[in-house]
Length: 384
Image (cartoon, rainbow, N blue to C red; front, side):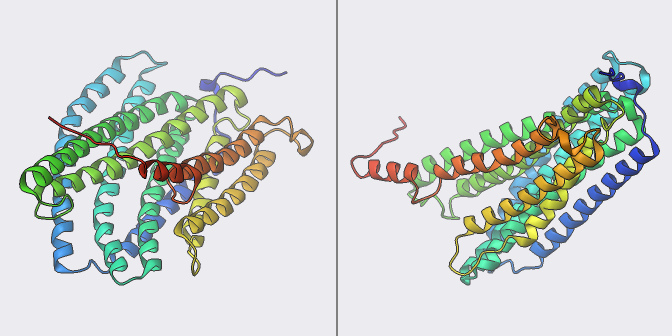
C-alpha cells in the first residue's frame, strides 16, 4: 500500500480547484434559496392588530436578549482569538488563519442564531393567521419555509467557510478549520444553554406570578411573564437550536476534512468531504419543494415523504460521487468504506426519526401508555 502524504503536503490540482469552486457555487445557491424562502414567509399576512402587537413584543424581547448576550460573548471571542494566535501551529500563517477562521465561525453561528430567532418570531404570527382562517396548507408552507431558510443558511455558510479555507490554505486547511469549528461551538454553547436557562426561568415566573398570585391564565398576554416565556422559547429553541445545528454541521465538516486528508491524501482528501455535503445541500432544496401535505394527510406524513425521497436521492448521488471521485472501482463497492459510511448515515436517520416520533406522536404505543397512566392518577408539582 502506498503511504498517504502528510496533510500539510497536499495541494489542489486543477481538477480539485474546479471541484472546490463548484462547491462554493452550491453554497451561494443555498444562501440564495434561503433568501427566497425567507421572502416567501415575510410576504404573507401578519394577522390582526392584537396578534402583531404580541408578536412585536416577543420579537423586541428576543432581540434585546440576544444583543446583550452577543456583547458578553464578544469579550470571550477576543480572548479566544488571542489564545489561538499563541497556541502552537506549523507556522504563523496557520496561526493567523486559525484565529481569523475562529471569528468567522463565531460570526456565522451568531448570524444563523439571530436569523432563526428573528424569522421564527415573524413566522409565529403568520402561521397563527393561516390557522385562524383554517388554511392548513398555507400554515404548513410558512412553517416549513421558515425552517428551510435556517437550514439553507446553515449549509450555505458552513460550506462557504470550509470551501474558502480549502481553496486558500489547501493542505493546511484542516488545521485552520479547527478555529472555524471552535468559533461555531463557542457561540452555540452559550446560546443554547443561556437561552434554555432563560426560558425555564420565565416559564416558572409565568406560573408563579401569573397563575398563582394574580390568577391570570398562563397564555394570557396580560401576563408579562408569558411574553418573557415566549421570548425564552425563541432565544432557546430557535436561536439556540439554529446555532447548535450550525456548530454540528461545521465541526462535522472539519472532522471529515481531517480524516479525509489523513486517509486519502491528494486522492480526494480535500475535495470528497466537500462533495458529499454539497450533494446534501442540493437534495435539501429538493426536499423543501416536494414537501406538501395531501388532502386528509397529516403534516408529519408529508414531511416524512419529502425526507425519504430526498434522502434516497442523496444516497444514490453519494454512491455515484464515491465511485467517480475516489480511487476505487465498482467492483470494490462492498469494500469501500466511504460508500458504506454514506449509506449507513442515510439509513440511520430514519431510525432515529422513528424512535423520536414514537415518543411524541399521539396514537403510538409510548404516548398511549402515558395517556392510560394518567387515567389512574395524577402527578402534583408543589413549590413551597
